[in-house]
Image (cartoon, rainbow, N blue to C red):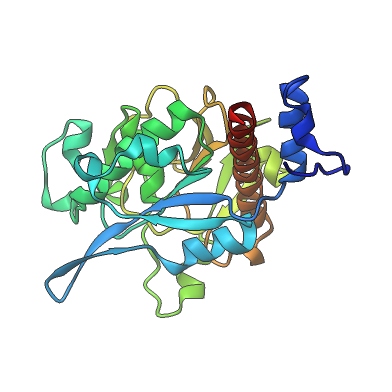
Length: 293
């Protein structure tokens, strides 16, 4: 049995008060040693062979700002992975950005050169994981391509090249050799009054970076807009019906997140939700072991 945060043996509470036992376990295990966040990989061609990859800036932000342990999920799809069972072993899920785009077939449009490049293996993995994570109440954070995946997974559609849409800004990566410039602030976004991001920012606007071609066209039902650019482009969403943390942003908060107050707060809040799920999951496992003993 484990000792609780206040020194008593929490296992002794199992039979007389399971709810008190669970509360004590969450307190004792917060933060747990290894709260796991799954990060689906992109599939890249290297010398003619497929490699599953995750960008360093994403996993580094998870470790430094969210204080969780990232775990790369190979993009092998439902045919080879039991995604539901996998989620049962995770405490959070984060969808990253990528040079690739969601295939238009997933939102009812024809494939065109303007929408390339594609990563069908990631599509086959991520879109299912998003739906399963929201169903299971797994804390969820989506960035850039992941933000677009969230919209598509719930029934929305995308602009292939938002900079070619009349009245829209050029949201593409700045053509500059230095990463600090590429990922530097590019334009303001307005935050929904009394919304989730407004509470994190303690304000109604943010300056964000901008490195995307695609953007939300038709917003999926079940999503609530949390931020938008001055040209009307949707920049952030929440999932009001979600049972846990569930946010998506079009920009890249992971780049040197520890140097940006809002980005650090975003990852910290995600990490808090992840660690709470980890503690609760561990508590339930211990309850099951105690009941079986």
